[in-house]
Image (cartoon, rainbow, N blue to C red):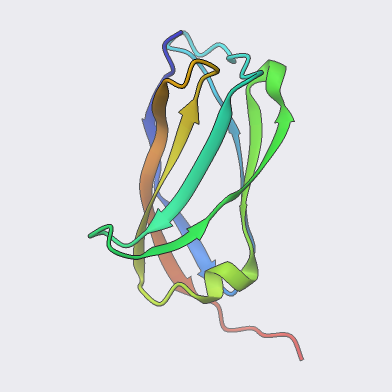
Length: 115
């Protein structure tokens, strides 16, 4: 199975939740059954010296390759830099690892707070 790799940059509001839905697709843009696979995703500084967060992963529909990733408002509040990097790692049942998605997170300062 060949996973179609991609690069995608996002803007993330500091102190806000950041959810993102992913659908794993092959090189023909067909959803890949990820039953038995694991997904990991992390946020790091550009030098990869400080890890800022692990995304929470929810396996929404494995048969159709769908997972939901989420950073919480508590996690994004710790993003002290304005530019961070992330990636998404897919591990198959045999232990083979493939990077599916990577990119830059541009951190924007949210101004509204709750009382």
